[in-house]
Length: 449
Image (tube, rainbow, N blue to C red):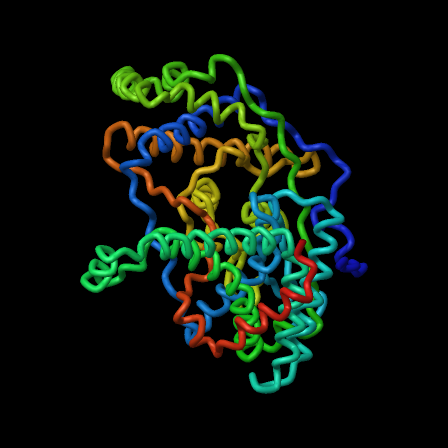
C-alpha cells in the first residue's frame, strides 16, 4: 500500500542545492580510528561485560513520561525494516503558522526523499484516524482495527521476519519439550521453579512481544489523545532529509591497534600501557577484529536520525522550550539511542532530552554536514564537536585498558515496546486478549509475504 504525500510534506525542511563542506581526510581518520579500535576492544572483552540496565517502565499517569512514550511509539510504527536504515526519530514543535497546532518533524537514518514523503503521508493518516475515532474504548474497536491494519501493512518487511522467527522458535520449543519428557526430567521439573525458562522460550516470548508491540503503540496513541487532543487536530507533518553515506575511511596504517594507539595520545606512559594491553589481546585476534570492522560493507558512516533533528533545530535559531509542544524539549525515537548519539547530545549542551541510550557503539556514525551558506562559524563548531566526541571515545578505550570500566553490551538494541513497558503492564493499558485476536485476524488480511 502506498501513501501519497501532501504538498506540505513533499520536500525536506532542510533542502539545499549546495554541496556539503567535507572534513579533511586527516580529521576523518583521526576520528574513526579510535572508534574502530573501541569497537574491536569491546568485541574482544564482551564476555566479561554486563548488560546495560533496561529502560525504566513508563508511568502513564505522569504527563511527561506519557508524552515521551508517545513520541517513541510514533517512531516505532515507522521503523519498518530491520538493519537500521529505517530507524526513525520525532520531535513535536509548536506550529508557528497556526496557534495551538502541533508540527511533527521526523528524520530517518537512511531513506530517500520519496520514502520519507510516503512516511510523512502515513503518519498524517494515522494521526487523523486517531483524531476521528470516537471517545471511549468500547466505541473504538473499528478505529483500532483500522490503525493496526495500516501499521502492519507499512511494517510488512519487519513483521514478516518476526513471523518467520516466531514459527521457527515455536517449532524449536515444541521439539525441546518433546525431547525433555523423560522420567528424570519430569522429576526435575517438579522440583525446580521456572523450569520452562529455557532459552528457546525466552526467544519465543521476545518475538511475541515484538509483534504485540504494535497494538500497544496504538494504545499509547489513544492515551495521548485523551490527554492532549491538540496533538491530533489539523497536524502538520514534515521531515528532514537523510544524510548521504561518506566513503569508507580506511588506510593501511589504520589496520593495527599498535598504530592507532600511537596517534591517540602523546603521553608515552599511556601509549605503552595501551600497547601492552593490545598485544595481550592479540590472542583474541584484536588486529583481525579491527580489519574486519573496517572492511564491513555496512561501514558507510551516516548521521543518525536523532542527531539530524537536533542539528536542524539548532540551525533554526536559539533552542528554547517555547518552540516545543507543551514546552517539552524532547526528541524520541524508535530505538534506544546509541553511545555516540548520546555523547553528541551531552556535548551539545542544549538541554534537549532524548530516549535513554542502550550503550551500543556503531562505527557507521558521523557528525552532521556543514554547508557554505552557514558560514565559517559552522565549520568551526563542527570541529569542536568532533573533538568533544573523540575525547569521550578515547576515554572509554583507555578505561577498558586500565580495567576501570568494562563496557555495557546489549545483544539486541531493539526494545520490544519502545517505551520500557512490560508485557504484564501492556494489558493494564486498557489491553485485552482481543489484541491477540485482532493481530491474528489482520495478519490474515495483510499480504505479509
